[in-house]
Image (cartoon, rainbow, N blue to C red; front, side, top):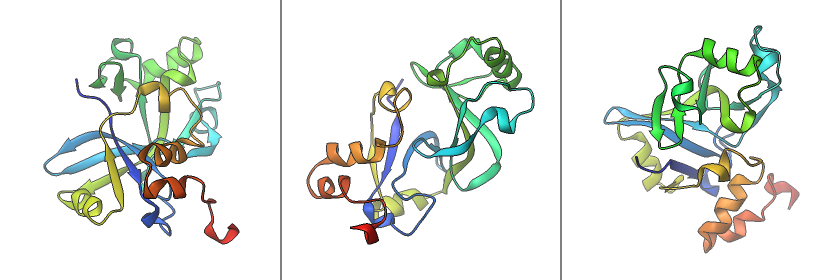
Amino acid sequence: MKPANFLIATPTIIGDYNFHRAAVLIVDCKVSGELGFIVNKKMPYTLDELVEEVHNPFPVYFGGPVEQDNLFFIHRLGNQIPESIRLQEDLFWSGDFQTVIGLIESKKITPDQIRFFLGYSGWSEGQLEAEINADSWIRIESIALNEWMENSCEDFWKNQMRKLGGRYLLWSNAPENPLFN
Protein backbone atom coordinates (compact mmCIF):
# COMPACT_ATOMS: atom_id res chain seq x y z
CA MET A 1 0.00 0.00 0.00
CA LYS A 2 1.46 3.37 -0.95
CA PRO A 3 1.37 6.36 1.43
CA ALA A 4 -1.28 9.03 1.14
CA ASN A 5 -0.79 11.36 -1.80
CA PHE A 6 -1.46 15.02 -1.02
CA LEU A 7 -1.71 18.23 -2.97
CA ILE A 8 -0.76 21.42 -1.19
CA ALA A 9 -1.99 24.64 -2.80
CA THR A 10 0.81 27.06 -3.54
CA PRO A 11 0.36 30.74 -2.74
CA THR A 12 -0.30 31.33 -6.46
CA ILE A 13 -3.85 30.03 -5.97
CA ILE A 14 -4.79 33.20 -4.04
CA GLY A 15 -8.12 34.41 -5.39
CA ASP A 16 -9.58 30.91 -5.74
CA TYR A 17 -11.65 30.62 -2.57
CA ASN A 18 -12.18 26.87 -2.97
CA PHE A 19 -8.49 26.01 -2.98
CA HIS A 20 -6.92 28.95 -1.13
CA ARG A 21 -4.50 27.38 1.40
CA ALA A 22 -5.96 23.95 0.71
CA ALA A 23 -4.50 20.53 1.40
CA VAL A 24 -6.13 17.81 -0.71
CA LEU A 25 -5.92 14.09 -0.04
CA ILE A 26 -6.08 12.24 -3.38
CA VAL A 27 -8.24 9.14 -3.02
CA ASP A 28 -8.65 8.05 -6.64
CA CYS A 29 -6.19 8.41 -9.50
CA LYS A 30 -7.04 7.10 -12.96
CA VAL A 31 -6.11 7.96 -16.52
CA SER A 32 -9.45 9.80 -16.77
CA GLY A 33 -8.58 12.08 -13.85
CA GLU A 34 -8.10 12.41 -10.11
CA LEU A 35 -10.43 12.80 -7.16
CA GLY A 36 -9.72 14.01 -3.64
CA PHE A 37 -10.95 15.83 -0.57
CA ILE A 38 -9.78 19.09 0.99
CA VAL A 39 -8.85 17.98 4.52
CA ASN A 40 -8.21 21.31 6.20
CA LYS A 41 -11.40 23.35 5.73
CA LYS A 42 -13.85 22.62 8.52
CA MET A 43 -17.41 23.75 7.85
CA PRO A 44 -19.47 25.76 10.36
CA TYR A 45 -21.91 22.91 11.00
CA THR A 46 -21.75 19.31 12.13
CA LEU A 47 -22.99 15.94 10.89
CA ASP A 48 -25.97 15.87 13.26
CA GLU A 49 -27.22 19.06 11.60
CA LEU A 50 -27.11 17.40 8.17
CA VAL A 51 -28.20 13.80 8.83
CA GLU A 52 -31.41 13.27 10.79
CA GLU A 53 -30.39 9.85 12.19
CA VAL A 54 -27.17 11.20 13.71
CA HIS A 55 -27.26 12.77 17.17
CA ASN A 56 -23.54 13.32 17.76
CA PRO A 57 -21.81 16.48 16.48
CA PHE A 58 -19.07 15.09 14.22
CA PRO A 59 -17.22 17.77 12.23
CA VAL A 60 -17.91 18.15 8.51
CA TYR A 61 -15.29 19.47 6.07
CA PHE A 62 -15.55 21.21 2.71
CA GLY A 63 -14.28 18.47 0.40
CA GLY A 64 -14.31 20.56 -2.74
CA PRO A 65 -16.47 22.38 -5.26
CA VAL A 66 -17.88 19.28 -7.03
CA GLU A 67 -21.17 17.72 -5.85
CA GLN A 68 -21.37 19.87 -2.73
CA ASP A 69 -24.77 18.41 -1.90
CA ASN A 70 -23.27 14.92 -1.44
CA LEU A 71 -21.67 13.61 1.74
CA PHE A 72 -18.46 11.55 1.52
CA PHE A 73 -16.19 10.09 4.17
CA ILE A 74 -12.77 8.60 4.78
CA HIS A 75 -11.97 6.54 7.84
CA ARG A 76 -9.56 4.32 9.75
CA LEU A 77 -12.04 1.52 10.53
CA GLY A 78 -11.38 -0.88 7.66
CA ASN A 79 -13.56 -3.98 7.75
CA GLN A 80 -15.81 -2.56 10.48
CA ILE A 81 -17.46 -0.63 7.64
CA PRO A 82 -18.47 -2.99 4.80
CA GLU A 83 -17.71 -1.96 1.21
CA SER A 84 -14.82 0.31 2.25
CA ILE A 85 -12.10 1.02 -0.30
CA ARG A 86 -8.55 0.72 1.05
CA LEU A 87 -6.37 3.74 0.30
CA GLN A 88 -3.38 2.68 2.38
CA GLU A 89 -2.74 0.35 5.31
CA ASP A 90 -4.85 2.26 7.86
CA LEU A 91 -6.96 4.54 5.67
CA PHE A 92 -10.19 3.78 3.84
CA TRP A 93 -12.66 5.64 1.68
CA SER A 94 -16.42 5.25 1.62
CA GLY A 95 -18.38 2.18 2.70
CA ASP A 96 -21.84 1.36 4.03
CA PHE A 97 -23.24 4.59 5.49
CA GLN A 98 -25.89 2.86 7.62
CA THR A 99 -23.10 1.00 9.41
CA VAL A 100 -21.33 4.32 10.00
CA ILE A 101 -24.49 5.80 11.53
CA GLY A 102 -24.81 2.74 13.80
CA LEU A 103 -21.19 3.07 14.93
CA ILE A 104 -21.62 6.78 15.63
CA GLU A 105 -24.84 6.31 17.58
CA SER A 106 -23.37 3.46 19.66
CA LYS A 107 -20.29 5.63 20.32
CA LYS A 108 -17.97 3.04 18.74
CA ILE A 109 -16.40 5.60 16.43
CA THR A 110 -14.73 8.91 17.25
CA PRO A 111 -14.02 12.02 15.14
CA ASP A 112 -10.30 11.13 14.93
CA GLN A 113 -11.28 7.88 13.15
CA ILE A 114 -13.47 9.36 10.42
CA ARG A 115 -13.83 12.57 8.41
CA PHE A 116 -16.97 13.66 6.59
CA PHE A 117 -16.88 15.89 3.52
CA LEU A 118 -19.46 17.82 1.57
CA GLY A 119 -18.36 17.77 -2.03
CA TYR A 120 -15.08 16.65 -3.55
CA SER A 121 -12.26 18.01 -5.64
CA GLY A 122 -11.86 16.56 -9.10
CA TRP A 123 -9.66 17.00 -12.13
CA SER A 124 -10.18 15.65 -15.62
CA GLU A 125 -7.49 13.86 -17.61
CA GLY A 126 -4.34 16.01 -17.74
CA GLN A 127 -5.90 18.92 -15.83
CA LEU A 128 -4.11 18.34 -12.53
CA GLU A 129 -0.71 17.83 -14.16
CA ALA A 130 -1.21 21.12 -16.03
CA GLU A 131 -2.02 22.87 -12.74
CA ILE A 132 1.05 21.33 -11.07
CA ASN A 133 3.21 22.47 -14.01
CA ALA A 134 1.71 25.96 -13.63
CA ASP A 135 2.92 25.93 -10.00
CA SER A 136 -0.59 25.90 -8.50
CA TRP A 137 0.00 22.70 -6.52
CA ILE A 138 2.82 20.81 -4.88
CA ARG A 139 2.40 17.05 -4.77
CA ILE A 140 3.58 15.49 -1.51
CA GLU A 141 3.84 11.73 -1.56
CA SER A 142 3.52 11.05 2.14
CA ILE A 143 2.09 12.83 5.11
CA ALA A 144 1.61 10.85 8.30
CA LEU A 145 -1.99 9.92 8.97
CA ASN A 146 -1.94 11.34 12.48
CA GLU A 147 -0.55 14.64 11.16
CA TRP A 148 -3.79 15.52 9.38
CA MET A 149 -6.47 13.11 10.62
CA GLU A 150 -6.03 13.46 14.37
CA ASN A 151 -4.83 17.05 14.71
CA SER A 152 -6.44 20.42 14.22
CA CYS A 153 -6.68 21.35 10.56
CA GLU A 154 -6.33 25.09 11.08
CA ASP A 155 -2.54 25.25 10.76
CA PHE A 156 -2.04 22.28 8.47
CA TRP A 157 -1.34 24.33 5.32
CA LYS A 158 1.06 26.65 7.18
CA ASN A 159 2.92 23.66 8.63
CA GLN A 160 3.33 22.16 5.15
CA MET A 161 4.70 25.48 3.85
CA ARG A 162 7.25 25.48 6.70
CA LYS A 163 8.30 21.91 5.90
CA LEU A 164 8.79 22.79 2.24
CA GLY A 165 11.09 25.63 3.33
CA GLY A 166 12.82 27.90 0.83
CA ARG A 167 10.49 30.32 -0.90
CA TYR A 168 7.48 28.74 0.84
CA LEU A 169 8.73 29.55 4.34
CA LEU A 170 7.77 33.20 3.89
CA TRP A 171 4.20 32.21 3.00
CA SER A 172 3.81 30.16 6.17
CA ASN A 173 3.72 33.39 8.18
CA ALA A 174 1.72 35.49 5.75
CA PRO A 175 -1.76 36.53 6.90
CA GLU A 176 -4.79 34.75 5.45
CA ASN A 177 -5.74 38.00 3.73
CA PRO A 178 -2.67 39.82 2.31
CA LEU A 179 -4.47 43.15 2.77
CA PHE A 180 -4.02 42.69 6.54
CA ASN A 181 -0.25 42.65 6.19
